[in-house]
Amino acid sequence: MTVQGIPEGSPHAFERVPTGIPGLDEILLGGLPENGVYLIKGGTGTGKTTLGLQFLLEGARQGETCLFVSLSQSTRMIERIAASHGWTLDDIHVHAITPNEILRQQRGKQDVFVTDEIELVDVAGRISGVVEKVQPSRLVFDTLSFIEMLATAPGRFEQELAALVELLGSLEVTSLFVLNEGGTGTTDLITDGAIELEHLEEDFAGLRYRLRVQKIRGSAFYGGHHDFEIVRGGLVVYPRLTLAHRGHFAEEHEHRPRTSYASDIESLDELVGGGLTAGTSCLIRGPSGVGKSSLVTRYAYAAAERGQRTAYFLFEEVRDTFMRRSAALGMPLAPHVEADRVRVIQMGGTSVLPGELATQIRSAGQWGAHLMVIDSLSGYYQALPDERLLLSEIRDVIRFLSERGVLTLITVAQRADPVGTESVPLEALNISESVDVTVNLQYLEAGDVLIKGMSVIKRRDGDHEKGMRELVIDRSGLHVGQMLPSFGGMTHDGVPTVAIGDPMASSPDSDGPPRT
Image (tube, rainbow, N blue to C red; front, side, top):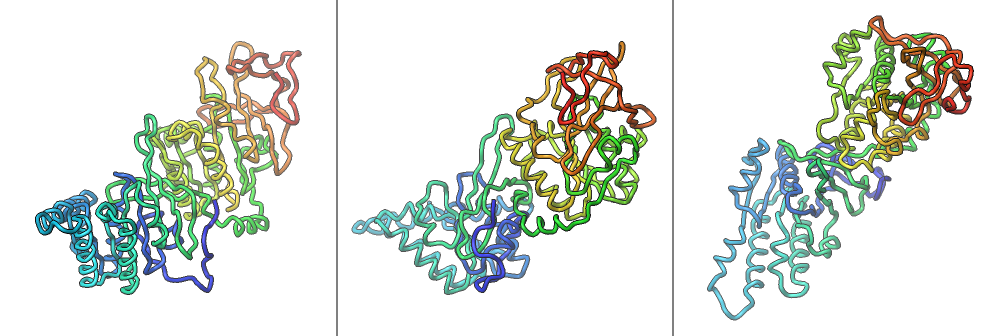
């Protein structure tokens, strides 16, 4: 996704009017160009009126004169909508002309001319009159669809709309015109921009909302679809991570010092070929319970001990359980959380919007996080409203953080556990080609017990040990042992096939995982 329109700083750049909607102003590069007329399009229940009210409330907050003209709802209903979000409209001029009011006024007045055309002239005149009287700097007109319905003669709707746009231009008003889904396409030609809102029905996840800026005449903006929510307090927009000016950060990335992040466990650091490098990504994969979370927690704890900041995103484990377990393993994070060196962000629930994680990651980057942990990709996959979004979203996350010099650690349960519990399909979570380092954890048979083995499958930015070490997690903490002399592979269901020390066991492969 790229920036669309005229770049900022050009000779034709102008002042922008902030919408007051979190995330939307970022997409609009600060807001809407002043004194323009913009369409807000969408189906019923997509938040068009709420967006308009937020726009006016932001103007009122800045001391501007604001006007809300409604042709679809009464003043009482508009106030009810505002109250549901905890708003008051005391500082906004509200002028409602309901369809029933127009019909009552026109009934029986004439029988020579077409009734609809007479009604249209009356409505257009009243709208122009109230705008000229109030002379607002911000206007929301809800909705154009009623005027379109009254305009039965060809070209009449466009004529009245063009006249209204001309009036607003002479008064220097920044206006939002609400248009219901399915309205005429000619409005796009008359107005200066358009924002489309929509909702999608997702299986088991309810409604998912998203918007896109279709055009902003003579101005740059970020294109593509962006998720949003309607909560108490209005719309919250989650811009996609691909908003970054990649060229700028990519140039900095080439000259940025290569900070190394050690685990402070000597044998572990030897296995991965030294500490993990800033600006790279590392995937830790393995069956449930093998120690993936403990391993990434070790890196987070070591970084915090050195005074570096970590943002830890939890998708499966409850935050309190995670904090207690980490402390029990000799990695107490609570002091670092209190000192604001570690932030543990609980994600999840029934659904997580892709843009929601993007917003949290961007916020953590602004906070100054050196290390970010996504634990786990399996949980993120299950929380996404559309599983097809996973690969593109996680690749955007990796690229975004890499360009900013952040070390990214991602865990994923890609294999079944020893008792045969099924995991998420491998093909859905195969991001190994997108990461710089891949660490594999697995169970191995040693006599009549299972032990845990740890190996590095690849490392793009350096060398690594080609063998496997034993991983031990007990009450004293996390330990990485000496190199195992020989080991076997794993079947597709995660059950060890060869015991440690078996002379028939294959040796490690320098370019990939142990051979089966």
